[in-house]
Length: 120
Image 1 (cartoon, one colour):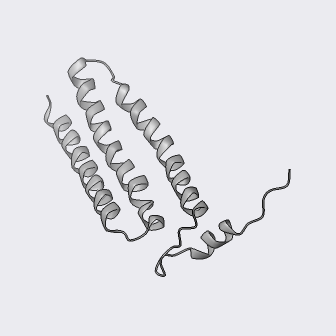
Image 2 (cartoon, rainbow, N blue to C red):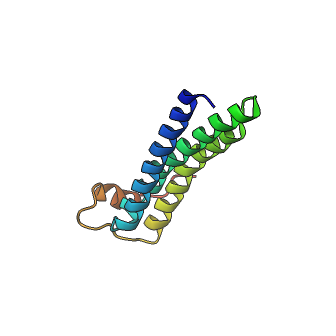
Image 3 (cartoon, helix red, strand yellow):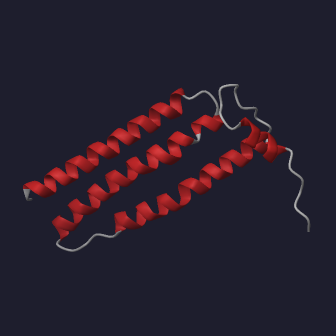
């Protein structure tokens, strides 16, 4: 394997691992659900993307043709992670989980909770 491909794969793995570490740390340390939504959806998605693209480059080299399985997994992850975060936030608002005092955007949570039903 050429040195430049090894360097690219290693850099992508390190970046992906760093984002996964930061996302996991944020998930464990942030105090309420509204703050915790940021780390798994942003940092972990970027981390998995880095690892999967590194895997795609390595497998493409080893198999002598472009491996798109990892690219499809990455695309699926990039599409589904924001949807899952939206559903978690809606569930937290529906169950009236109150944000902490230091949570920014509390007015948005209150306005979503108190909004009128849309007309039919």
